[in-house]
Length: 199
Length: 393
Image 1 (cartoon, chains in turn green, brown):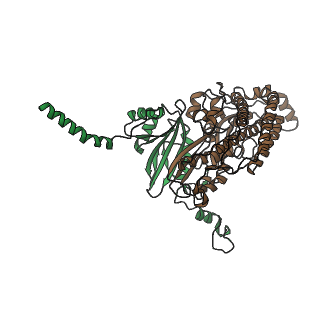
Image 2 (tube, chains in turn brown, cyan):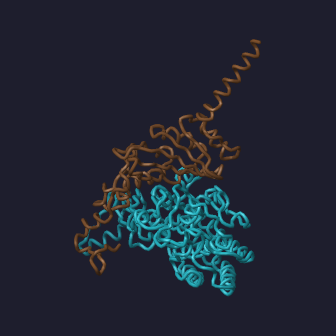
Image 3 (cartoon, helix red, strand yellow):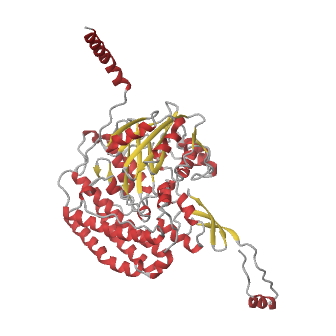
């Protein structure tokens, strides 16, 4: 009787645990090249979230404090850093940094996404992992005002010195008012009825 | 480095009441570009010691027109006319990456005919861009004849483009969901085949005058060498990466359009110097002509050239579901990618273009120029095939 009781208890426990497990567990990874790659990386970096988006596209979400650590692990598989894309989510008050990685050996593209606050945006540089990050970080610094700690060449890069520290790709940068401050009222481009501004 | 003045010259100068003294160290700062022909709207500040470059500082920004900011303020379809200006010699590449990314976010299956046309247009753009590159490179090393020939052959492709799209340089042809117009007719296909055969027959002449010429060898061999590890760490792509022995080609490794069905080779050389980069480009030109022949043998599939979606009837208010996508194609300069983010409105939330020159035009160029002779600076620039609008956007 005791055995059967235990069995019943086990069953009850398993049935109770089962839904919790599916809630806590990450979505199942497909048994493909991409799925195995995500699994391998997540074992080394359990703090990250990973998923397979489609064939040859995988995605990771990493907390901003551990991004350098994660990218160092990822750089063993992903030889090239293609780009650092910054998206300004104004309503959430956050910058999203997307590190676009490409693996030559596995031919898979990975998005490594992280979010930081718009106020005093600071990130560690990844120049020590990929020296090419210097250029991408200079661009992101100039257009968005993110400070990459450890990058020695942050400063005017593409824009003119007078445009530096205006961060034109931020969503709250008003192109029209900036043009008016630079060119004054001479830059008057209204239509014939003087009601609509023509761009 | 000190420059000794010959004794005879000194004596002769003294007769005319002039005194020549040796210079202790001959260092100076040289502004190379943006009006220099080799740099194309781009400048490098060279810290020179005599004839050698001590340090190079890349100074881009002359072509910054704020396309990414403008793209956030315009509806999806009008952005094509804007973004294609990012890559001047092959303007079809930015059109295609943007369209591919938008297609992926919307979830459209682009019709077969449109895919065939897009592949042909991309390959035509590649051949036309090789011609443009031969023109620049021939001029850099003083073989002007090859450059003039290439400009003339490029004209043939530009006429074909004009008939197909209405534009010579900027085509505004590939749009999300397909292409803007159908092929003009069978006559255009015959003309394209004639052009491909014509350029193929002229490859022999290019070999004689440019690629198999000892002047090219003397000028490029052992100049601007990079190794495999350096190239991968600096995200060098395209022919420059294949010249160091990495067989990475987006058309093979992340196939798009009709490329999985086509038969072509990825030329790889191991030396990593300027000569290897020149020769890889020469082999790729041949492969591209071969691909165009195969596509013409295949013939355009029948069907619509634009996706059939009722949402497209109200184009200015056409809304794209929220999401993001990254698409990339193989251009003659390297891996050209675009990251498009949509928030569900009728304008893209963010468009970010990854130009290949962002990697090989800034840090790599600065490294390779260290210790180079002044006369080699244009050679390194042109064999890397730097395209400044990629960096500035």
